Image (cartoon, rainbow, N blue to C red):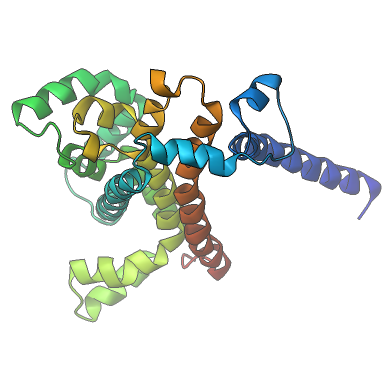
Length: 277
């Protein structure tokens, strides 16, 4: 390796380290501030933890912050949304990739157009529709629409185009396997890296979703964790910034755990290589 290649490699490594620091530093500061008092936070940024974690925790649990209830509500919504979104998006992508039916390209164009539209564009109509069918206050409007995930369909279909061999599908059909069996038993294991990657994005998006639950849920017992964290900005918590940071830090734990679990499937799937010739 010549000196030019070494310099290029070092520059790439330095750039990757810089991107890693940009991603990690905000999270690190949140964790540090979760251990500090309001007075310490007002003094400025610190890189060292303090000793006020249990004090902040006492404020959270002593003033109505139902953390375990929020965890349960957010987990129920996020897990179900992720399962439905990934499965039906993969099925849609499989249908668009494998079958050649009339109107296929029109349907694909509609999916691409939906991706380009901002999600907030339909929020008023969505609310009016949910109110008309009397589902306000229910988790159904927060879970079921996840089935129509245009971005997930796009990603999985593009992944299928790069790794999925039609010979594999044809061989399964010749062996007498039905279409649903082919999809569930053969195709899904092949595209595990794509499913794992989109599962992370879907779970994080659903877990951090604040606007939609905020306009649909009015019962505090059904509040998600981001809604409870948002309530920490109310008057009763106006000076307890340490408690606010602790609530934010706690809300990050499931996201980190879910990413750590699902990232194994991305790495293991990529090392297996593709099936397409």
